[in-house]
Amino acid sequence: MSPEPPDLERAVTILRAGGLVAFPTETVYGLGADAASTAAIERLYAVKGRPRNHPVIVHLADAEQLGDWAARVPPKARALAAACWPGPLTLVLPRAKRVPDAVTGGRPGVGLRVPAQPLALALLARFGGGIAAPSANRFGRVSPTTAAHVRADLGADVDVVLDGGPCAVGVESTIVDLTGPVPAVLRHGGVPVERLRKIVGADVLDQPTGPARAPGMLPSHYAPRCRVELAPTPSEARRRCDELRAAGHAADVLDPGPDVDAYARHLYGWLREADDRGLDVLVVVPPPLVGIGAAVRERLEKAAAPRPS
Ligand code: TXA
Ligand code: MG
Picture 1 (spheres, rainbow, N blue to C red):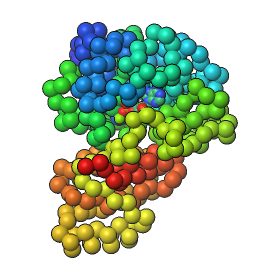
Picture 2: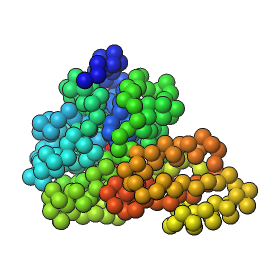
Picture 3: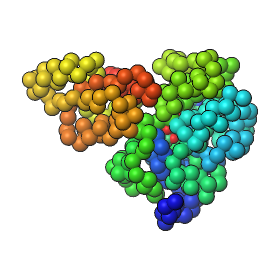
Picture 4: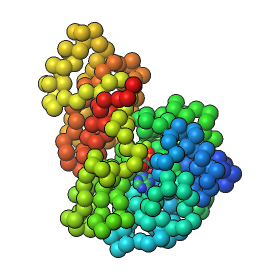
């Protein structure tokens, strides 16, 4: 095991004092605050520039802490936690009384997950409590998958950034709501729906873009500054890019090929790079719809959606 970074102790002290700590998870970097402290979470919302009625996920060191945060843990939730944690899966469960309204946005469910990242787990174990953490980007921007992304976005507004290197998964956790009779996927993510069905059976609602979608998942989420256009094939992408360039636009093609895991891992970095290069338009060939490809597509479709001006 690698030695613990000296920042870890400082991070715990900061969390206990109501401050903000950015930390790596296997999905994206999170901006963490003490989930039991309404004041700390208010600060989190202010720094993120996020509307107050959007709930945040509470991160835990292990599934044994579920009972501290959930009023009830249905058998299917137990099965999912046992099979997927630590890992990129968030379970929405009926909230325990002690969960601050600021965490759930006043909703009856609380989102919980145990991340699969050694530094995150070390932080959670030392802190002892739950850490509320949205992705460590400003509201509506591309999620950070390196410590440098976090610093570029949040700068001095975050008290410490723990650096765990690039995130292994690269897109956010899958969110499953278990407060109703049938598990419902609210967001595609690191755990593919096929895998959920293997664990709890075929009866899983999968309409994250329908009315049951996670609150705060706006149509134009995950977007870089440049416009994103989707093209069904590499040749179609090329043709469209040539057309845009002929019209005077700074355009390029993103066509990472069929490896969906690599696509997920690099997606957000590539979107940021497009902005750093000053592109007006990025023409993207989406990944195949297998495994984590569905989560990547969901992000790309949102990135390509019309934006409020
Ligand atoms: O992978 C992830 O989930 C990352 C890392 C940091 O853990 N976190 C993340 O958080 O993506 P955030 O806040 O950027 O997105 C969380 C999503 C939001 O769309 C929110 O509405 C939904 O989860 N969510 C959180 N708590 C919820 C709840 N109690 N009920 C319904 N949706 C919830
Ligand atoms: Mg986010």
